[in-house]
Amino acid sequence: EPEVTQTPSHQVTQMGQEVILRCVPISNHLYFYWYRQILGQKVEFLVSFYNNEISEKSEIFDDQFSVERPDGSNFTLKIRSTKLEDSAMYFCASSSQDTQYFGPGTRLTVL
Amino acid sequence: GQQLNQSPQSMFIQEGEDVSMNCTSSSIFNTWLWYKQDPGEGPVLLIALYKAGELTSNGRLTAQFGITRKDSFLNISASIPSDVGIYFCAGETNFGNEKLTFGTGTRLTIIP
Image (cartoon, rainbow over all chains, first blue to last red; front, side, top):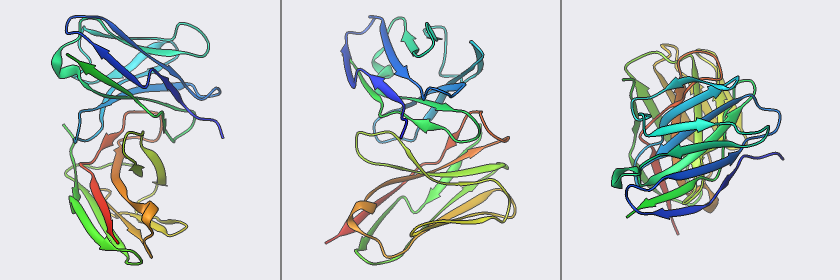
């Protein structure tokens, strides 16, 4: 069964550094999303992406965040200058009709 | 913003027992979804509900989309050890391909 994949599974970085989290959505899906989950809390929407542009973003998704689909398969989330409070699980999701399928997540730890 | 409140926050049950949890919102959602999350993994979709009043089953799981479109419940019958995890409801304001608003989660623990 097709699935969303994410790399790396765990990323440790120093505060102020840039990180890029990578996702490979399910191949025939057209809608892509990033969510985050701070430890012990609920999953929160960050951004949705369709037709090579952002379709919606949350208040969390400020100027430090950007997304890109650099080729036909990858979907990336970049955090330009990480802060301690960016430490969380980051989940990529994709959909074609109604249902969003989630990847296994990248655990980002900012020191 | 929109908030989804789940109850109970946690449950401790014996294997074989039935489980019931619910999700309420102050605003209307037109799609309700139930996801399960195992430790260190992403949410996995269990059941999707698209119509007010709809009752849908998936094996031992049954979920209903409330008539008011402001609530949903999930039942698990005859629980087994692999049911352990965190269950999240999620709502979507329109129909498909937009952001999900997640609930606060219900942690299910099975006592041996």
